[in-house]
Amino acid sequence: MALQDKIVNQARLAKEASRSMNMLSTITKNNALLAMARALEQRSSAILEANAVDLEEARKKGIKRSFLDRLMLDESRVAGMADGLRQAAALPDPIWEEDYANVRPNGLEIRRVRVPLGVVGMIYEARPNVTADAIGLCLKSGNAVILRGGSEAIISNKAIAGIMAEAAYHAGIPEGAIQLVEQTDRAAVDVLLQLRDYIDVIIPRGGAGLIQKVVTDSKVPVIETGTGICHTFVDESADLDKALKIAVNAKTSRPAVCNAMETLLVHERVAADFLPLLVKAMSEKNCELRGCPKCRELVVGMGEATEEDWATEYDDLILSVKVVADIQEAVEHINRYNTGHSETIVTESLANARLFQRCIDAATVYVNASTRFSDGCEFGFGAEIGISTQKLHARGPMGLKALTSTKYLIMGDGQVR
Image (cartoon, rainbow, N blue to C red; front, top):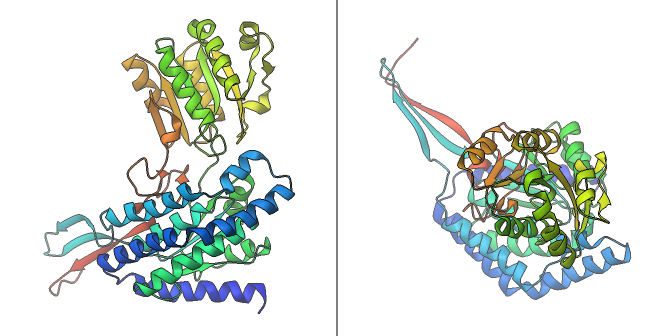
């Protein structure tokens, strides 16, 4: 069967399954989630063996360390995937949830309820845990799902999707609701982007190139998840110990993820005290610093930050640093270079905290906390389908409700207009 015909058939099967998904009870969906969680744990050795093959191939290709970290699975990450499914099962079912009701003067009773989107397409790179998160969230929200992961994780994704589909179907999920596109040819993406008759929404998750391609070429509606050029601003009133702890965590805990900090801004009144602390802490983490001219005056030997650095998502242990005159300059810099993802201020000034949160244009804006908390699990969503940086339909970490639409239900008794 030709590539296009096979993918079209998968999308058609997903569409057919989605019509039955809409009618599933919460109990059936939760039982399926719990069954999938158990299956992942019971067959973790098979998943890790598959992942080892992907990792070996990636190493042969000379893939950089940060990318390998995204790709790698271990027992704790498989357990985390299973835990995410259990958390989703414990969450309220959004389907048929009523969020509006009104009785009109003519007697019409109008209600608005949440309904599934239908078929959710996911196009993503590197991270095989996304496979589990996407399947779990889509099924709990009553959607069928069609997945196209990157070629670098294809063996891992096949193992995870196969194990989860088997468990889900045995628990009562309609056959065909979980589809994995196994063709790694880039043409597979082009096919998916044209299937408006079968796929209701596509969510890209990966690098800037992938996201831009999907947004530009898709005939299917897209929820854009953005790259993460995230900032931390150390205000003049900041507790410097707190600021150092936040900065080190935001940059070094997992530098390859989208909520990691890429640029640190420091108020000029605390720069002389804070930058030496930063240099010492980051050198211990093997993190390269690239600074503005003022930074380089204060820290001998610091590398030079160029205009390109301010607009770069490194996905690596590299941090650009800039000294700013005040909070206004910090806000202007962030709003110019950020990608609408996650931004934070470290400050003891309530006025500056409120000003920062009001003026920063991003999906998540923190005060005195690391940007690394931008995550579905951390927000209590069980897991996330992605972090939306657009402003329509969904913004920020997307959990169950972001995978629903609404329907109006009207009851009458013979009214005409």
